[in-house]
Image (cartoon, rainbow, N blue to C red; front, side):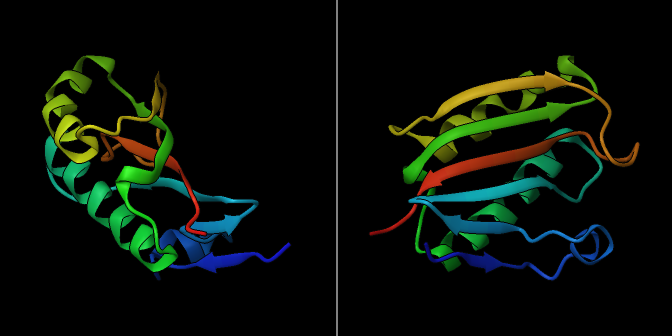
Length: 120
């Protein structure tokens, strides 16, 4: 099986020893991704932009998504992201889960982990 690793060059990748995405077994597995900004909406948009770049490098798009997991330290903030997520996935929504938990640093309001089909 061929494995392709995709790095975004982010600081956490080098510190923690992981890559942004791995293409393997017919899927693109995108690591949990946080974004920049002051609000959960800003961070959601930023995280999705980082994910989109990794997907493009893998030859995939959000339309190929099959599974997404959202991690938030405050579940009450999730509703503000719904319009962004609905627009991002459009007519191709993946199976989804939202988990309330602590993130790697207190300034982060959302982390997004995504799995898509890999291009053939």
